[in-house]
Image (cartoon, rainbow, N blue to C red; front, side, top):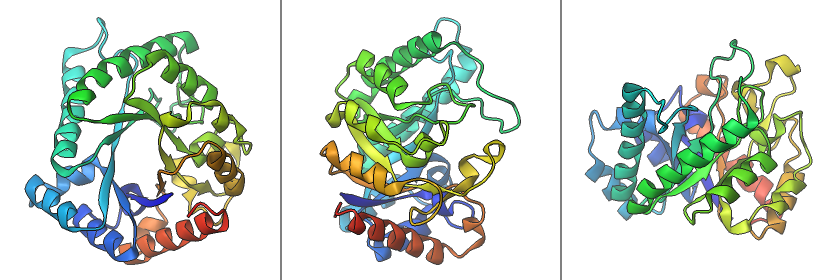
Length: 290
C-alpha cells in the first residue's frame, strides 16, 4: 500500500505550496488536494507550476477533495444557479486533475451539513435513486477527463448514506468502471460506533479506489463528528480490524491521513505532517501492509 496525505489534516495552519514541500520531505507517495486550498494556491501560482512540481517530484497527486452532493442535483427539480455552481466546482477539479495527472475525485453523498441542524431527513429509496442518477451523470463527464469517482459514505446521522451496504448497493446499480469507493475508517465507525469492518470484503474489490485511515477521540455520541478525528495510532477505531479486512480484499492502493481536528491546526504544519507520516507508516508496518 502507498502512503498518502489529505490536506484537511493541516488545513488551518498550512497551504498547498507548504503541503507539497513538507509531504515530499516526509516521504509521502501521494497527496489529496482540497479544492478550496487549490483555489487559494492559484491566486498566486498557475496550474502549470503545479503540474511541473508533480512532474519532477516523487510525490504524486491522488484525489481531488471533495464534491458535496445535494439530493436535487442534476434532476428536473434542480435549481439552475445552484446546479451551475456545483457543476463549475466539479469541472474545475476535473480540468486541474487532467493537467497535473490526478485520476480520482472524492464524491460525498447528500449531508445535512449544519452540526446543530439535526439528522438528515430523507427516504432511503429516494437517496438511492438520487445517488445513482447523479453518479451516472457525473461518470459520463469524468470519463472524458480520465477521472474515477470515489463515493464516500459518512456514518453519522446527518448523512444520507451511512453504511457500507448502502454505498455498495448504489455503486452496483451505477455499474460504471470509473465509479467506486473511498473507505474512511472513522466515517464507517460513526455509524453506531461500528468497529467490525468485515463488510469491506462484500464489495467488489476492484471498486475500492482510495482509503482514509483515521481514528477518533472518545467522546459522547452527541459530540461525535469530523472535528474529533485523530491519527491512527490512538483513539477508538479498531484500526487493526479495518486493515485486516482491507488486506483480505487484495487492496494495494493508497492509504491517506485525513483529519479535520482543530487542535492539529494550532500546531506548525511541519509537526502535523511529520506526525501524520510517522503514525501512518507505523500502523501500516505493524499490519504488514507495506
